[in-house]
Length: 128
Image (cartoon, rainbow, N blue to C red):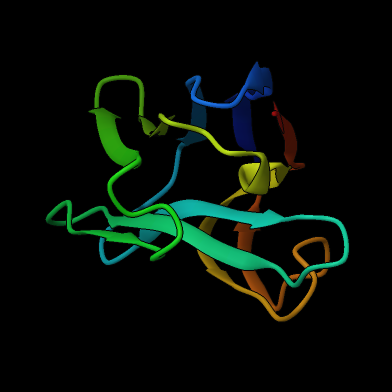
């Protein structure tokens, strides 16, 4: 069974920074993309950022553009692929459960994706 290991998250004051990481192991990733979604209370699941494995092309939601940076590491020897999401200048509106997804497809609820591989989710809380 494919598992995505998430790390990072936590609580921070507005203006602070956090870093999320997600590692996939023993997968064939050609043509894949990995990234982060989030779900805040009362809101729909939102795509935050993704990066393509093949050429590192990044996508950012308008709400995080200029504040979040996604990057990737490929440890070919250990067959581990890690994506990092550096989150700077955090705002209270960034408070949500963040989910890592590999080739993720989802509707309104991050916890009930349509396809892809998904992590368990990690809480990010930004206080004002």
